[in-house]
Length: 250
Ligand code: F6R
Image 1 (cartoon, rainbow, N blue to C red):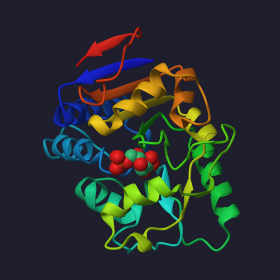
Image 2 (cartoon, protein in one colour):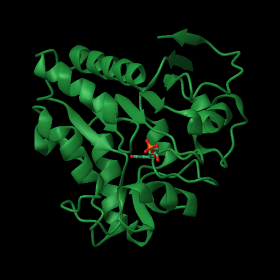
Image 3 (cartoon, rainbow, N blue to C red):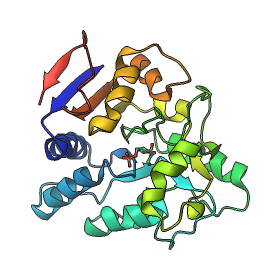
Image 4 (cartoon, protein in one colour):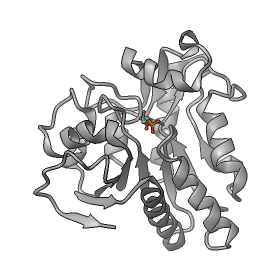
């Protein structure tokens, strides 16, 4: 496990963007695993800057997003499809045939989950997966007491997640209670993982994920077992670490 501690959100975003950009430069047909939420927005902005400066070409890249709300249609402004289009895809030369986000409106959810998983496998697997982390330790929407063996599946969101995500909705009642999410097994099968975290409200969970016991009550703690994972976090998110682990100051 590598831990990179950056001064602030901007530096964290730049570092994450540079790592993704290097991946795409080295392997133009990379398979990227992507996340939504507030944390990666700065990273997407930096990637768009690289693209505008002609430094990266996304034309052969394929993407798989971690999750999508159940019951929200693509055109709904709160859907993760809409988020990805607005924050990233429509600003770069990615081929829209190459983007994959679970379909929250699928009639047969089990089939949707199975096919999503198959598609990832058939693409050759995710080269690099970007993760954020919930204050409760979730990655994707794999909530505490997670099943480490799960692949893509329908999840019930925790009350705390619904509350945290309500900041994007007008009324808390509008926040979907379920989502389709890659499972822990899907995430752990990625060849490389970068987890981004920023701010004091993530300090406790970052400490538990990195220095605590590996336990289903902190889903992100399983990342300790991955052979190529880098936590890219700012000083505020790192503030509770005692770290005896390799730390690189970015
Ligand atoms: C988003 C996702 C979630 C978020 C997490 C943190 O695709 O899978 O796990 O990464 O909820 O969200 P923010 O970044 O908004 O704090």
